[in-house]
Length: 299
Image (cartoon, rainbow, N blue to C red):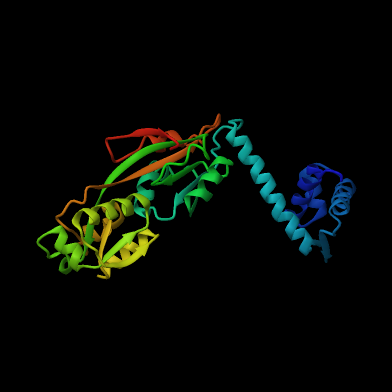
């Protein structure tokens, strides 16, 4: 099978954008007949007509619309390639960040503030489970992943985990749910909203084993935003780091129970070992509200 001629694709894209063969030929510095020949060769290669003539305009067929969508993505990728290798001044490729679905949105915003404050870099944000995000990072589809877990060294040997923050986990709820004399009383009598995030869940299970109690779990949630909403609605007391509930704590809607849990949630920024990392990564990895900063290999 013959390879696709990308010159033909570029000419097609110009005609599709302008809608007139004569105008597109002038912009491309080609004769109209030469451009017409290039478009016809592309149509023959793809096996479908790409334009219908409507009056004096050329209108995309369904196949033409599909071809234009692919052409846009191909040439956008080429622009990103040039920017990525530093061959064009003043251009920074989009920053692609993946975040663990359970991660606090407040924490993500705080982490991204050095880049957001400049307004010079386009952000492409996605969320999902760790395995999918780390595979995307390893395949160069992402620049950085935010998570609360370090990746497996056996599976992701070229990834590096930077510990960017560690925050204590507390119990938070409306005032009426926190009027207890001890941690044991609180956890024995109040329903608990528990994130499924591994370090919080592991620490909580260890805590209740030491206390010798079986608390009533009101909800197990894999989304920190839902933890926040359930807590503010009085469904139960939430086990979470304070950053998840920043707005509610500042407004006095929720309060912290005066009983330390001795559970720490760590936050990691995972990057791949690359020759051409995104230029914004240095600013992001140098930013943390925590004094302690640690780089760790994959676990």
